[in-house]
Image (cartoon, rainbow, N blue to C red; front, side):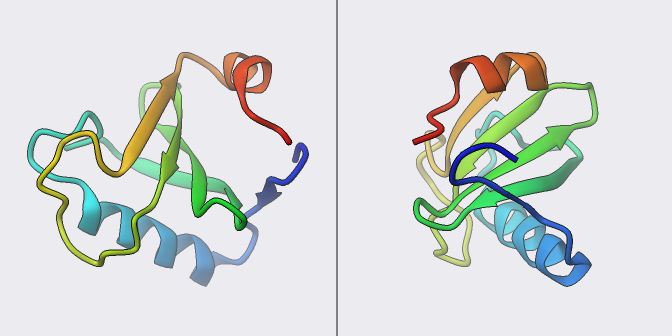
Length: 93
């Protein structure tokens, strides 16, 4: 991975992160209803990088609230058209 990002290799960790993300996604969130697979995480910012079923990738800042967020802007989410686009635009510091 790049910079502070590390690949999520452990299956239990991946499932935990995906479960937390599903809990946080509210009814009006841009990721609602999409299949998501966590690929990497950034521990210093509580961020995860995940692939979407349509080939895009998303960078999400988890709130760790354990519940659905009412505000559709949370968890904060940026969707990229491809992994290459994410690499070009991501904060890797």
